[in-house]
Length: 90
Image 1 (tube, rainbow, N blue to C red):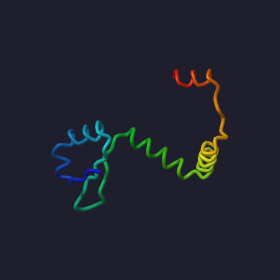
Image 2: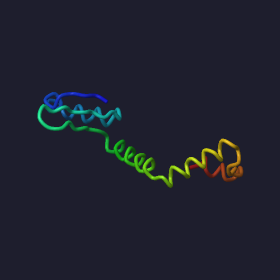
Image 3: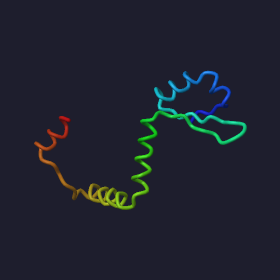
Image 4: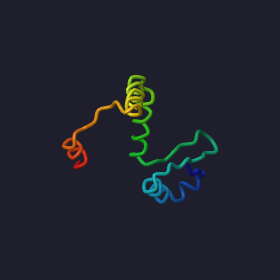
């Protein structure tokens, strides 16, 4: 994560915002008085929120764990060739 002062950020805000969006890199802006803040691509933020939701949801994490065990042991569902063709054509 890139860090810079609020004064530097303010001087060329448009450039930093465009860079954060295009490079998917969050920018931490330090302030002398008050708390720091972060500027980041909204899509990246939404993705992180979804990840946090899954990680905090014990039911989903249990399903993922069971799925990994099933996959590792080779006992999982095996789609037919037709199903694979449909999946891959998306």
